[in-house]
Length: 263
Image (cartoon, rainbow, N blue to C red; front, side):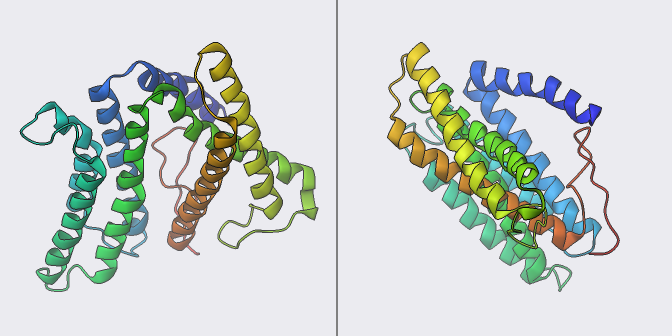
């Protein structure tokens, strides 16, 4: 058992729960903005330390902060009204980042190439853009309950996929060379487990918190969330495999990030 990993979960999970349950708009948005900056830094480090690319860091960090704090702009009506679509604002920021990256490449005298720009742009879309949907979801009707579906489906998928791998042993079928330890059986049972746990959570919410969440709706949503989570996991695995690393960093105790010399 990895003691550091257990301690990280025991100490970190209550803090995340407290922020999502009791945090207001400012606290939640700042929290996700910080997570976005830390995450994109680790993503950039993975490419730069191995020499596969030189991401344009300042553009990535600035975009991550801007996207993470979009919702706070409605506190100042001169910047953005509450009725304005935040998705459109995010799209404008991403498009602006694309042109800034293109201009930077053209004016770098080949010190920055198209690979560096592509890695930077992919990181912006892969990390802060997707993270933005969590605070938006938290601010929706019954958001304090709904946001947990994202986390629950992710956790349940991992747990049931792991159990399926243990159960099937050598009989399991490999899913992809990107992540050799993942199997088709694990992916299927992970999704089934996510649906079951999500339904149990829905029963609790409807019974004890008097929500009116559709069970049929949750079956489809939890299945989609599980699949999306697995696609995201394979994407992260492909990034790590391309760069020859085990984990992105050792920022969180118990989650090491040693760089392997050979891919």
